[in-house]
Length: 143
Image (cartoon, rainbow, N blue to C red; front, top):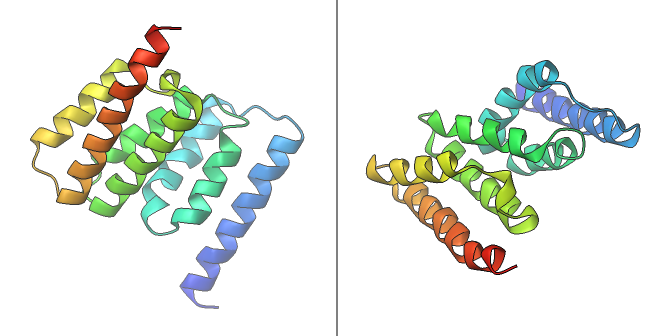
């Protein structure tokens, strides 16, 4: 079995495990999340759709704000594709669940990333995420 097949099998296993945990209403502890989420967030660039599905299941068994924290931490990587994919997923979470999934510190971090001179794709995702949060603020404040 080649490495690609083995990694694909691991992703399928993780998907089924997280799906089952959600079905039985298991709540992921911080230590459980700390052992798997950093690895998942780092591998989002290699196994994008598979990892997104696993993270979607994770948000059923682990608080979204804490999950987003792992995605933000993954932005410290040198891998441009990982940064871009994490920013895209964070923006998707904001669109779906509102601004309560991120903190003001996260938004400041996005701005700091813009000043670091990252690749154009990362800068575009940062701008998109920050502008989306800015557009969302008036609707939240007016409620």
